[in-house]
Image (cartoon, rainbow, N blue to C red):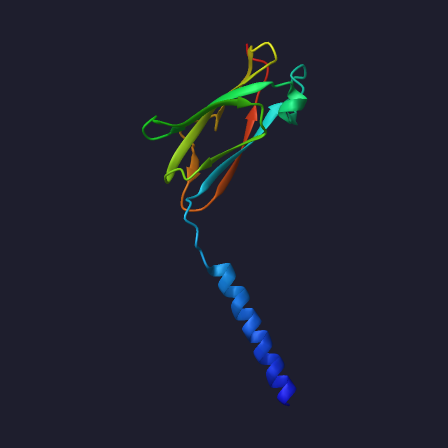
Length: 140
């Protein structure tokens, strides 16, 4: 009977430590807005084929994140091709992304607004959030 009590106490104690670790929110950084980028890997096809920037032949990209309510530019960058963007600690609100992909000859070929309807918004509250963005090619 004494072993049973000790076993129960050990299980309860380990459960208490495990739960407290899961429920503690000690994060000095704010939320992360992650945008997964899907590049049109088969621009010669009429249908969109989700691919990586390497599959699509994108050499580099430029992007700007805007607040939907004010149109304020929140973040912008020119960088080598990537398959995702993380914006650290954006204020709560709705955003939209404008992104352009360039080929090896620095010609803008891929372009998108995410979401397509800027009024729909990429919504950020208090927690990390992720969205997908399809980037079409070629430009007209």
